[in-house]
Image 1: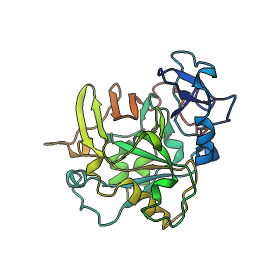
Image 2: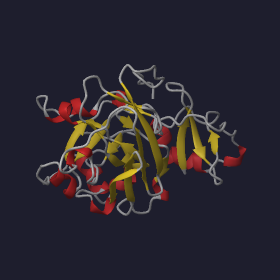
Image 3: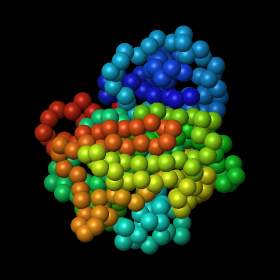
Length: 294
């Protein structure tokens, strides 16, 4: 299944994509694409529904983040060796973990706000994991049983805030609108091998990132197992698994960063595409801004 959320920011309703690619409303069946709805039992009940019996979502309706009520937004840094090299950092021996504030989450096509004072806002297309069953001290062989599905994430980063402001990457990762998620949560049964997915990003029509998840240092199963050794993972938690090379920080001869008025397009094979416009902080009223009701 391809699950999604639609409507105004903070008022999203659950939905799914039917066999003809049309959006169907699930609000008469479940309250949200969140929590126990993402459990194996919850997904099994949704799979039994005749999609054609559900109301159609009006064309042009906004896509919200594909997961609601996210408890933890965990990221894996430097998870592609060539990205670590372009960033001037060592290839990690163990997964590098950091958190991204859930207030950064926004819809896949919402405007991205360049933070106040930013001169180094950067892009990062990443494979997202959505947890469906509590994971605590799980083995690598059992880890995928705890995954509900996958999605596209743009792990936007302000490099000065991240690397030049006294440590703690979270400062450069958590600005409002720095976590577009979606358009869909694609359930695990539709992704036979998450380590064989093409992944790409463009800025103003120029391809900047072009990779495949097979080159990840730590794969999905290892990431879920590893994180579960340090904290429990709950249904609806989101894990962003790292980005392939081609970020602005690594451009030669000089880094290239985002500014207001640009357009990003990004996607992952089978998981859909995102498209965001960059705007200056304070430049206009944004319905998505300063909301955490996702």
